[in-house]
Each structure stands twice: as structure tokens, then as C-alpha cells.
Image 1 (tube, rainbow, N blue to C red):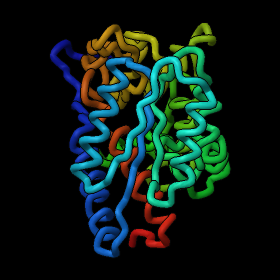
Image 2: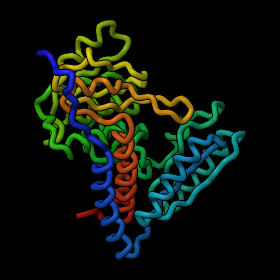
Image 3: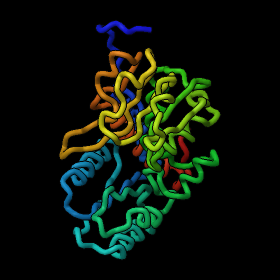
Image 4: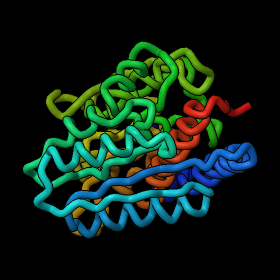
Length: 295
């Protein structure tokens, strides 16, 4: 099937999805505060990376807008692993802190995975603690990894059928491709798909992407998805990105819009939904820890 040159895919921006999620979060925060519970999301930053500091500021502003308090600890770049763990342990022990975020990346001499494992899994708003990843694999309740959960929410928001369809994920990383494959295969109206995970170690990976009804790029390789890799009319979600300074370099080339039926924009696609899911995890943590589950 040839595609007319003037064809342009329907855009799937993340902002309306995030706004709907955050509106629900704000209502849940208001109910908690009416019951004399002040939701709290603590943040930890190590070092002076400008981008990381910027992300923390964005999350703190969003927390304030939603009604969270957001205690913060900023450690120097030469902080030791023990220094970082002491801060995590302090927040773990504080009953007034319901969610905890350790900003990634940390300086090279520190082990982020060790730090993440030290976080109380019930305060893990990233949904990446090993225990929570195990819960996801077993289909048990728990905080979900934010970017995969945001992609599922985006597909649901735009009423894109997923159940029974062929979904191909290019990328097997622990933060996106792998958990997303589990999430979209689970038996749920917004999931229940036939999911194939392929990666750049497979020489003919495009053989799989060209048959996908829903193609999700999660490789972190700028421009790896070109129009010839996309089935005409497919839904294309750009989840993987890299940064060159402050410039965002997505996996999906913008020219794919000439082939796809629907596609996330280069900027403002999955990113806003990821942040929204972090706050959904945070309010859910406050509800669990105070025995006030959302209705």
C-alpha cells in the first residue's frame, strides 16, 4: 500500500493525558488533606548537574501545585554511598514522608541501583524498586514504572485499541521496554496485547517493527525508527530518547508521520505522562500508608 506524500499522522500529545491524570491526583490530595493527611514527596539530588537540578525544580513546582509538601536534600558531588544511604534511611523512617525520589543519574562513583534498593519499596514513586518490579511481573498491586504506565495511559486516553493487537517494542531496557512488555500483556481492557520485544542485537529487527499495529520505540538510539520501519497506518509511540546537551533526540524520526496513522510528537509526547504517573504513585503511597485508599 503506497502512502500519499501529503499524509500526516494524527498527533498524540501527552499534555492532555497528563492533565487528566493530575486532575485526579489533585482531587485525591484534597481528600487526604480534608482528612488531616498532608501528602509528602521527598526528593534527593547528588551533585550539581544542571539538567538534574532542573528536573527536581520541575517536580517540586508540580508538587506544590498539587498540594504536596516536598522536603529536599541536596548532597555534594563528592558524597559517599554511605552519605546517600543515610539520607534515604532518614526519609524511610519519617512517617510524614510518603514518597521518595532519588534523582537519576548520580555521580559516577556512586551505585544508583544500590541506592534505589535502599528506598522503602512502599515509598518508591518511580516504581523501579526490585520488589515493585517483581510485583509487576507477578501482576500484584504496587507502584508502576512511570514511563510504561504513562504509555498505557496515553493509548487509553486516545481510545487506541490495544487488546488483541500486535504490539512491538524496540528496546529491552529495565526502565522502559522490559516493564512495558509485561504491562501491556496483562489481562486488562487497556492492555491484553500480543507483545513482541525486539532489540538492536537482532540484525533484522525491522522485520518485526514493520508488522506492528502499535510500535513503541524504547531503544535510546536517536532516529533509529525511520518511515521504512513502520507499517502504514500503525500507531507509533516514541518512548526512547537521548539528550545532546539540552536538545532532545528521539528514537522516532519525525518523517515517520508520513506513514503512521497516529504518532507522538517529537517533544511533549511521553514525557508529560511520565511526570504525571510519578505523582499518581505518590498520592497512592500516601493513601496506602495512612489507610485512606481512593474511592
